[in-house]
Image (cartoon, rainbow over all chains, first blue to last red; front, side):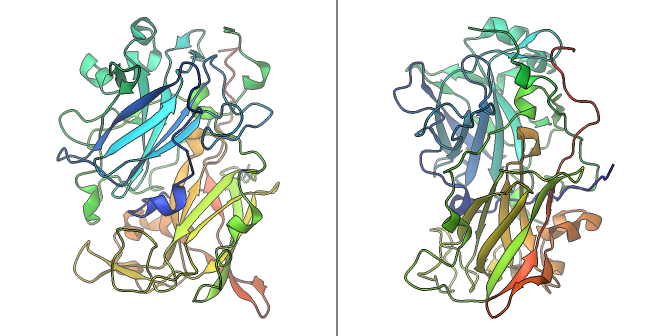
Length: 191
Length: 244
């Protein structure tokens, strides 16, 4: 079988918003969708400074644990269209803030007879990142599912797990800061 | 709520890891912006499960045919050398990746981006926004018409200039195949001093350089450059959640 070597990764650079902005791409679901909420947070560098030129890109199952890759295809970028795509994009603002309107994904099989806790897969792109970095977002109010999740269980300690668990913020939404470096550096994954 | 596994989700692929020497190290100090942004802890291995081996499917109507022609949409044509950039999106097994989103962005012919934070004294072009998008066809092919971007200075080090390049964003078939890269032009004299280009291990750098193509060059119209993009191929054993 032919084996071709992959094209190398490069940074998105500071002007990523020119190419990667889609109208309402931060709406994984349309406003007013039952059960929808905002996930917000800041993208921070190793000095604790906000990263104002980053992109947070998410991929998730629907509330029943199914993925939007099924037939018929749905419009995946932005929630203004029909159906549930499961794909979202949020540019960070001047204060490093991102925000995505979505719904909680259902549980997804773990490939070994069990289930994973509800989660989003997340790619972070920015100037200064020569390759995307990957994390997951979990939900603090899913404690029982989280305690059985094979990915969270594979992490060394609660402090590591806490970097991936979004906390309810009191208005129905969730908050999770992403720290690229430093004492509380987010756990990033090699996929 | 159903907890059964739909048949369509069985036997999904897993994707090979890229060998060492493919991608740049996140911490590449010569590129100054990596110093405070590159994570310093080793990444944790994430086995590929459903979320990692699926990805968005792009339906009809997402992009318009004109979105692949950066020289249209304004009163006049943009200034600069008109070019065609075309190629195939394939995986490491040589298979085309059809119906997949390709997004590009670039500076204008003078090396200036249409962006609030690009303020070096080169002219903006009122007829150029520098953004294009398309879906690959059934054979994984894509083509853009644009103008050759200019080089531009940046503040990384004294007298630093970025070689001419076009940013490419690829979604592939799955979350795992996601890639953002930059396409460069052949024989650029600025390669040697560019820490972003040189962050990639030497043996892999030429995979980012397009090739001039007389075959695809359109007579009396535009020069053509070929740029094939390779995303990770599949593991031999597919992922079958029902049998695991």
